Length: 204
Image (cartoon, rainbow, N blue to C red; front, side, top):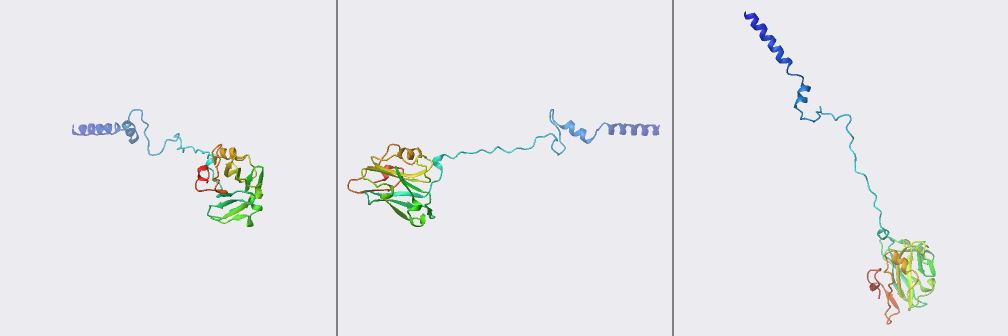
């Protein structure tokens, strides 16, 4: 009788062990409904991580860097001149830089010694090189290339009195107000820049 009881007990132990299932099955049973269990490795069909697309920003023409050359003084008359200053930290190469008063222009690299202006210094360009500088009206413009109707080429401008022909090109470039002109003081034979070169009120 005792042997029969021991044999029955052994059978019960074996049956209980087989009902426990494997470790993987236990993990599956413990996963929430609808969830996919993992074993530590990514699923083979998972999509790879992606990076955000890059964008290209177009810089407005008015934000484009212009040369450090600036017209700062105009002396009227046939013996007058245009004073141009290099406001940069490096010598300014004048080759190809055009000084214009419609319809006359000159490549500054051909009329300035060394074709350069040292940092912080100025040169005086004789009025005769651009057809004279009349007190009753005229203009002076600097271009990076001999493309005188192109707003992307003009980078400095001033007009006075009855003006000239390049004011609208300068206005399109954002460096001079459309239709504006400096009114010279009759007590002086010149105009000089004291502030923002694009503001006619800065010239007197």
